[in-house]
Image 1 (cartoon, rainbow, N blue to C red):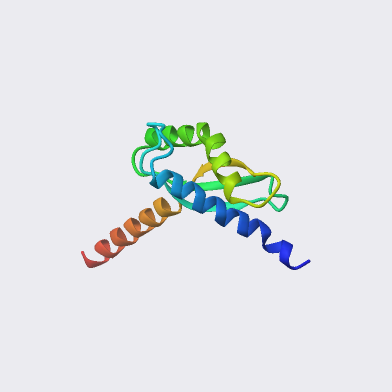
Image 2: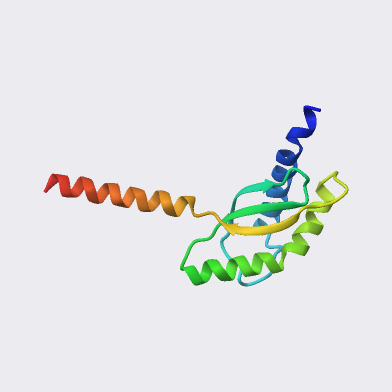
Length: 120
């Protein structure tokens, strides 16, 4: 059953599109959810859960509030996803911060510091 191995990836991509679209159109009206970027969605093999990785600019408190807002909007986003998915059930959504961009910026900053020290 080669086709079924791609199913979690297909569901994850559909979820990413649906959630991104809802955020861009301002359908999530929670004021805590500001500038949120969906960076990835990872669905479990049984399609019961999906980790939605998001990037949120700002202070740690802003990020926490945005995650709380997204989690409170999870039911609405799942109902939107149900219309787009052909599966019998829709994965439960779990929102997490994607700190990859922050780590990359910090590494770049450290490398620049090292270069500057080498030039002195």
